[in-house]
Image (cartoon, rainbow, N blue to C red):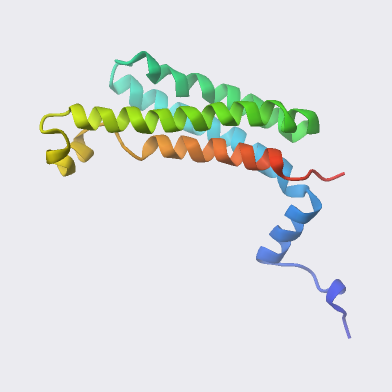
Length: 150
């Protein structure tokens, strides 16, 4: 009869074991790098449609490669995962929150403002999109606090 320790782990149990043993930190660093690049590219296209009318529109585009570089460095270096990755990720989170505010302000400035909320949500800047950037930064912060495999 097999004991509990001999049964192969599957699904969520395997993922939790990876967190416990420190294997997940590297994976999450890599996912942060990929997420930063994908979101920066999407943001570039969306902000280009708006002709980069506000100089702050360049900030998330510039932070994407920074987050990607920190995430990749975090995959290969414990030191980078604990220094560069949380710094880059915190900047991404702050910029995502700032973007949410700026998008909300942009919706308010549309004709009718908040009294025409449904239309302005659909036709104005996407209110929730900057929060997706914030999630990418949050992944990097989480990766930085997780323990790393030896």
